[in-house]
Amino acid sequence: MTADDAGARFRSAAFAVKLAVLTGASSAQVTRCERMAGGAIQQNFVLDAELQGGPWAGRQRWVLRTDSASRVAASRPRDQEFALLAAAQAAGVAAPVPVALNHGDAAWPPFMLMTFVPGEASGRRLTRAATDARPALVEAIGANLARLHAIRPPQPSLDFLGAASPHPTRDLIDSYRTFIAQWRAATGDARPVLAWTLRWLEARVPQREASVLVHRDYRVGNLLVDGERLAATLDWEFAGWGNPLEDLGWFCAPCWRFAHPEREAGGLAAIDDLLRGYNAVAGTAHVAADLGVFQVLGQLRWAVIALQQALRFIDAGERSLELALTGRMLPELEWQMLEMTGDTFA
Image (cartoon, rainbow, N blue to C red; front, side, top):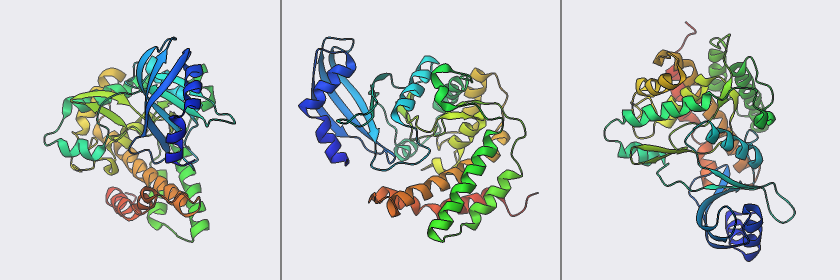
């Protein structure tokens, strides 16, 4: 179902009946349903509704999140993302409130509803607007991440994540190697810089790792900012058990600095600002040097995602300019990886 088809169906009278059932209302009327910008992996719609009766009675503005025509294999389904959002909310993480979940049936695809949170999420706009560094905002972003990392296994509501691995970083590297080999088999395209980066990382994998709930896409672009306030953490579809430094390194990777590559913490401020907020809540003593390997890991992961998006365009028939252009980002990412890793293993 295309985004236009989905939007029309979610505005229909039949959907209003479904909405009433899901939210415990006696009746519902959808007054607006429009596709939101972004969301290359999932489709997001802003939904305005008027409900009679039930816990959500009155005028509501929600976000409806459903699958795209094709998906990245690592992306979690809507029921799991809904459970992750609920767990984050319970831990005090800034996040939308989960409202309702449809598991999917013959009439309707799987989708989730969550509260609409106002704010700016565009990484390019946020970093372009930041003529001066924003240390207080980045400190709050670090503190918010520490609250997420306080969620540790086991968690009965998150049993679908499976058992936590004692070597989550090595597992990630192995999964990236597997996909890169699949890409080469499918396209004949060898990526020697990615092979180099895999070996560089393998030589530096930590031998002992903590395991916590990591977001795996915690970055400028998935964080809603309202003025100077962190309003919400979005897009939980990649979350799982992992090393907390993975999220910190991803936030600080060069690929997510947008208009200010010199500001290592998301193009907004310094790594020390991020870690000041994180350490204060987590009770840790991380320094910027601790993130180096995980910043390289973040670059490699984004390169793998770019290849996955390209395959959605090439093989899955999803004719999206955004997907095609994401695949074209590989040379820049590879150049940055070479700059970060140097030319020796010393």
